[in-house]
Image (cartoon, rainbow, N blue to C red):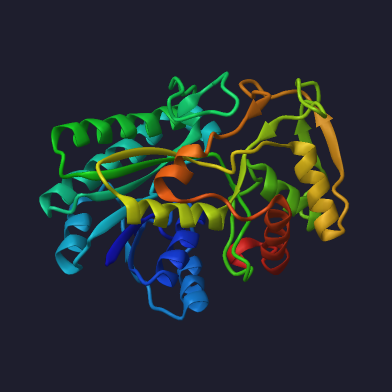
Length: 334
């Protein structure tokens, strides 16, 4: 089977490509390198010993998409391509609606043209917004509170409508929580531009001495230590979740991918310190607007429908994150 992976050079995409190849799939990657590096493709090939077909292009470009489907016998698509920075989406919403929504529309239109109707879509737990459910099931009310989350929900709605209009489509909408960690080789991992937005790469860069200290946004939440609780999922577990979904594609599936457990910010910091032996200096600062106390997945459906659940621990996450950071202090520019 040949799988087109849009955004395959990115953080989650690159790890999914590795696991796809390990599982015997052939991979074609489409990536514009807006927020990824071509070096990651070379490293996928080094890890797997296989050549990856790479097409440099924009998912919104229908001519580019059409040429891929003409030149390769694509059987299914895993669609990661998109913009993902929440803050940037607030500052520049039109950019996010253009790239995330219009890109997905172009992709599905060309898929339909070539009668390729197997699609795994990279969605996000941000579609739930300020959910009061603990844990959060797939049946929770959807109320995304920023343009990034809104763009993901818009694409979900488009794909749901598409599924209703044509039962021959097989679509999985995968809502994932907080991807962290890196491949055990230390060759591929998260490579944020500038100062990281996410907790784990921030912790890793403090450990590496690139940043002075970690800022923890609030220690007065109603949690065991006052810091926010989140569902951290190892990126390799997440990649394997996409393969499980690909194998089980049948009609429309909406599934959370998460560990199904919550860890606080200080849990993660202390586990990182214990695992690596490196002290992480931190300071408590004011809460960020819009942050909530506790947010983690109900992962029951993933286990029941996909036969998938996480296998990597918080210790594994910290160890592999540090292995990647220490081997690649400047990411793929090292």
